[in-house]
Image (cartoon, rainbow, N blue to C red):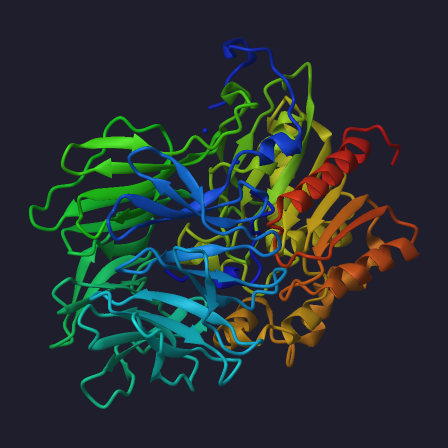
Length: 637
């Protein structure tokens, strides 16, 4: 599902976090842990069955950088398959008939991803041609004789679609993209291709290509008005396309489009909340629907033959995600994550009804009772708009022992704060800082109207909402020190930090800015070429630098740096293609020229979001030291 343009400026791996447990419930005395200990908790993802269904292919940062691993389903034994020490490795899946696997990697976080294949002997072949070409993986064909990718070698703005033969590894161009249409789905019989056109965050169209016809894209979505459409999956019989839309609603719901007649029918519509995704198992026996219910995914798994819902008993509490079935449909793999427990991998045997936990990723040095769950808070902004946040309370906090706090601002615009495990969030809470993870206006997942409420209002209404949230904490939470509330965020959230310090300089005690935009004019004029199809969506959301430069100038903190009076720390990746290093360089220089307090941490081998454990350790140690000095009150203002 496509939401707002939050792919542009999201907080990625650097911010790597359900009622609060009281100290007397602990089995061991409370203690604080280092960021090194928190980051020894393994972060992992993926989960692709091997052809014989005895192993799962995953990625993990166990060594400090993401690499590919296999996990034996029977024994839980983990085997490292790649040993990169410089670049992150993210696998896409085993080849259908052997244990070769595909993976993607870029260079230093530059996001120019290339496609590679590794054989069982460890030999690696790069499949992407062209140093500056970017390759995206779309998935395997249903008959498992080929796979699909997008490549922008011909035109850096657009991704042409290629179909690769599994045996020869030769690509065939099947769609030349000259109109900014992105591949969304391919039917099982490979006759039909669905392409998506992004006009803006709330207006997307679907085009259908009949490969047995003239091969030209035909518009199949509703033309009039701004309506979101997103392809989900084809039905197993290839007779209908399932798609998500908010036509006539504030919420995304599931519809079907008959490929023969063009008839549309409603398939599934929750009373409230967005449908996030829909897909089928390989043989079509199971259909998976994910609903984004107040920032927690509720998953519905239905047996398409019987209509019965699949219920898995004896599972830990948490958000279930990443569900997929083996080709035989005898096994199902998934992850469970909670905000006080990291993501762990499970396999469920559909014949016996037995779930098996394959990983226990929490660092054993950390006692589980020392991690905290969040409390969902609902409040109203000054104009009456209802908004939300997840509040994390340090275990030692009470009215007699008030603690400082951070508003944590997610990226985007259009991201969403969710109650899932985040080591940096737990690190701050463990060291005595409350964290209020905010879903302000413009966040996705709370309806179309809420998501649109920030359009071209950046630096104003969304920022005022942060101030309203800060004031709510100061007034209503007696265990938070009202004079010691800071603001922290990454990417677009980093912009919000700098906007708060520049436009409302007396509101927050300190700021922590991770690779945040400070000059919208430059940023929007330097959008990476491969985002051409999303460029006008960003202009609609933020402003057009060609026609609204004055407005963008006014909301850019760099040009108002002389108003910043509170201490700030800025962290930046030198290879960031979204928020260029010069953004942070100039902001630091401007603050220092006015004798302001600013600390600067620059990583030469990172991009937009910091993935290397050593860098994350350095960064969060710097943030903690800064916060202890300037927010806990050991330094005078």
